[in-house]
Amino acid sequence: MHPQKKKWLAINVVGGIAVLGSYTHGLITHPDTREMLWGSMPDPLKGIYGVTMWLAAAGYLVFMYYVFFRVDTEDASVGQRFGFGIVNACCAAIVFASALWMPLTFAYLDQPSTALWVLIRADLFIVGIGAIGLIVSLFNLSPRPTGWAAVILVLALLFFALQTAFLDAFVWPAFFQ
Image (cartoon, rainbow, N blue to C red):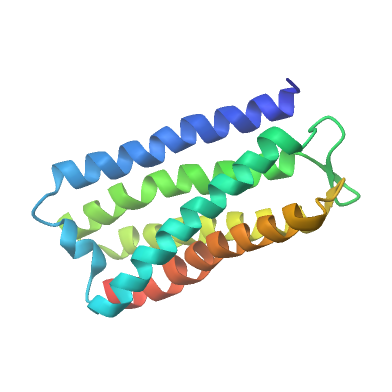
């Protein structure tokens, strides 16, 4: 396995465990305040979130499948200047910032401060920027996916970016604070 793919795999395995672990830990250790994570978000919008979060997760998993099984990282490049390392950087930003969101948010609920709010917002922007970076990388990937694979990948990453770069970064904060 190419070293870049090994790095990508390590980022996603370790980062995925960190994300799931932080969410599990947060929800188990904060049973009385977990509903407060929604802020004042109305129930119909929570329902939409319930769907979009699953679509976003599925989108990221589709992207992971494609990268693992279909991208030859030895020959892949992103644009004229970047190797596959840019995809690794985007994935690392996404998973490690995602792992910080719930601990930061519960810390804010326990003891609100401007500094924690700024950290939460920065954290969400990092995830969103990473998601947009994956889309840009996909459009500049060489060799480029074609046919149904290209369509499915674009849709998958668009669902992921819609959730992270729009709903999480802009909609959720409007109802949380």
